[in-house]
Image (tube, rainbow, N blue to C red; front, side, top):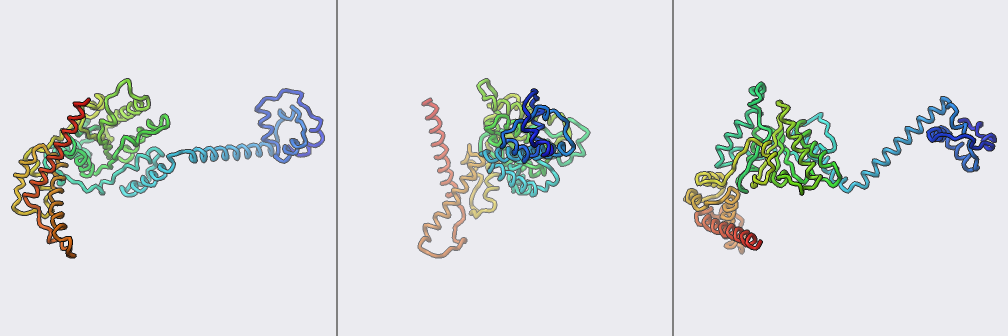
Amino acid sequence: MPTACMGNSFSKMVFKYKADVFSVFIFFLSVPPCAFLHLVLRGKMVHAEAFSRPLSRNEVVGLIFRLTIFGAVTYFTIKWMVDAIDPTRKQKVEAQKQAEKLMKQIGVKNVKLTEYEMSIAAHLVDPLSMHVTWSDIAGLDDVITDLKDTVILPIKKKYLFENSRLLQPPKGVLLYGPPGCGKTLIAKATAKEAGCRFINLQPSTLTDKWYGESQKLAAAVFSLAIKLQPSIIFIDEIDSFLRSRSSSDHEATAMMKAQFMSLWDGLDTDYNCQVIVMGATNRPQDLDSAIMRRMPTRFHINQPALKQREAILKLILKNENVDRHVDLLEVAKETDGFSGSDLKEMCRDAALLCVREYVNSSCEEETHDEDEIRPVQQQDLHRAIEKMRKSKDATLQNVLMHVSLD
């Protein structure tokens, strides 16, 4: 509005008509700030007819400009305030940097990710960085053969199976058995051999204090896996995340599980989708029945038998300094009930006995010749076995004591 129109005439104007709120708002935005400030400082009133009169072209342009500036300033101010008070802002920035670094390592380009997908992408594992192959797993030849046929072959030879729905890779694979028997190792070797992107999903990744954020993160897991397919979503200790549902579950947890299972079902409708959810647990009885239905391919990874223990010992001690008179079959017979992890720890203790003996005998000397460390002998393995047995018996006794007290 021109300044001339706001001279002495405005000093005589009073409110004679009731103006609507929108008209008042438009008027104040269309009046030049300097003229409006001049009126306010002089304590003048504005006539109601000024609110309802048509605006000139210049006033319309000025109004649009002010609305644009006002909207932009408001948007960026609110956005800055939300980011400033977000306690997880630093973690989100670090996760985004980690995700971008991993995406470059696995050779993914021109893929746009949302904020939630970036949070999940921070848990990507580059298959080339996983130094695990089938040759690193001993005593599980039957399981490896089945995995090659049911999981790896349909992914690597997709063109052979694309016309058959029955021969598509399973959408869910469950590895269950006692702890320390190689379930996680098998999952990593499967991803490496199949050339799949490996998402090592932690249940804590999907938990957020803000209502509704957990469902968005659960959706981001599958949307990211689809963008990066072929991919494997691996959930270690899956029973802690997808255990049997009950009426006592928290509402947010129940909704997150429902969202996760709903999106998991969506994989079955797309037969060309090469996304596999693989879980590992030593408590399969705690899993929800709906989860078990979604994991039709199951492998029981049991404790190794005699021949399997011998094969594991050969693999562990393959590149170590071991006396040629060591009888690994005899050692395998003495380690009944040991898992693969127990056998590795036992061999480590036996090797440390040799190092400890060398250090104690030459602590006053300044020679550091590695050839002077004697090889691992049968007696070292026997001593390590006895130590491991005492440790296992003490742990079992402690557990039984707590059970009896309860």
